[in-house]
Image (cartoon, rainbow, N blue to C red; front, top):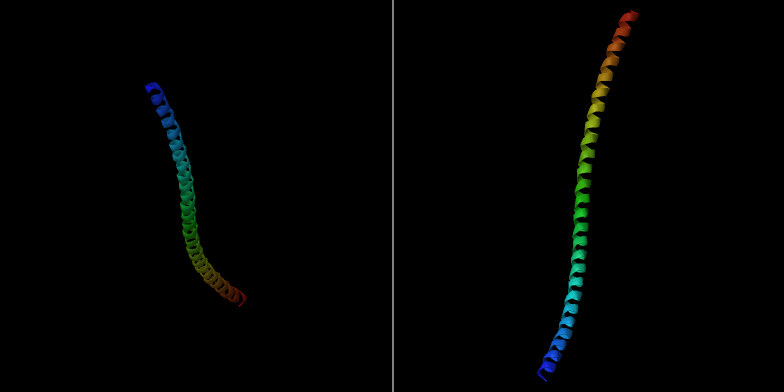
Length: 96
């Protein structure tokens, strides 16, 4: 009789343990999927911030590049103007 009670207790304990383990596994799956979802969300937010910063840097670079181009064209225009003026003076002297 004692052996039967011990055997029944062990079987009942095993069934209860199986239910607990199944619940634990299910909750672990949920927490894993939640963690993955959180990671994806955080990654997306970080990528958005990176793209925003990159856009700011590119905009700043384009502005600086445009300013430098304008300066260069202005200098080139002045140089060409001086050279044309000198060439015109030489041409006038030569024709006199």
